[in-house]
Image (cartoon, rainbow, N blue to C red):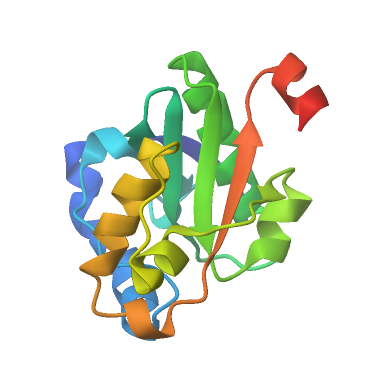
Length: 168
């Protein structure tokens, strides 16, 4: 089956929510509001949405990739959505993309690098990292999550500029 990846529009909000609902219920995607300006979607030839991904600002120069759902397993939809999200983030001037996931291997195959500390670890330990305001902010968000106790997500990062990637 063929599909195209495009920016979401307001008419996509209900289909995006429908894609996300079973993943949220299963705990593979965290609950989030659905805003068309944050999402990219994969649309099949028949007009059905077969995947989505969100990009939400996280800190100065950093955007978070989240809510990745690919309904057509084995068709490259997830990888295509990640590539499109990375391109959009770079076009919007971000220097890095981060992802919190329970499937780090997928993101590593896309070029992301695991980070030593994830925000949920800081939230559980009630730590504050003064030198990393963005990580501290996200830890505060994690602290309010009802799934904090069992969270095992990995934080991964993808630098968007070649000179940054060479140093990573």
